[in-house]
Image (cartoon, rainbow, N blue to C red; front, side):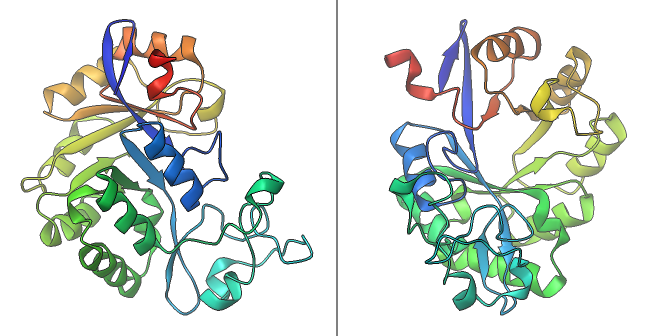
Length: 264
């Protein structure tokens, strides 16, 4: 939790503490806990042998390196877990992180459960096959981390499938923030808390076609009984502006806005 100009807001670590550590690695997740972030956002993917790992991109080219320091433009979906783990995923960020392994989702979930930090699964999970979705839900349940795992979605049918299995899990919605869409999502919830994500209008989010946050959309979210999440902010002045205009409950940051900054 961070106080920004008198407003208390939770901070979500985008792909872990990715400003200080290689993204989507256990090093980034450990750093997020050490610096007292409230949530960790991460990106599940499936290997060819249906192992659920954590990787943002479709291929390993940007973050994976072999023992010679070379990368391969190979889709993770075409690799077995063993093949993917023949590469390391930290050296691209800095030599001191060379050797960082590709995490399994179950590793990150157990870590989150043990450290009492919430996890937010990116909405890429909506693209999984029905078989992969079943595996994902089983991994969440078997990890013992259902109490700290949140599921991001844009569709009511996906939210309904999750809530049927986990009636108390947090649902993170990042689709169109209009009243009809929010009512459709709210209508499938059981005891599930709802966070509606609005994009803060800045350089990092300019690519997204979803309308940017407005005072009106933030007010609508609150009238629907949901929390307001804002993505993605990496500047203290923008964070202050966001809190003044939208009073968010959660801000997502790559780690440049830090929970412990007020203690320094």
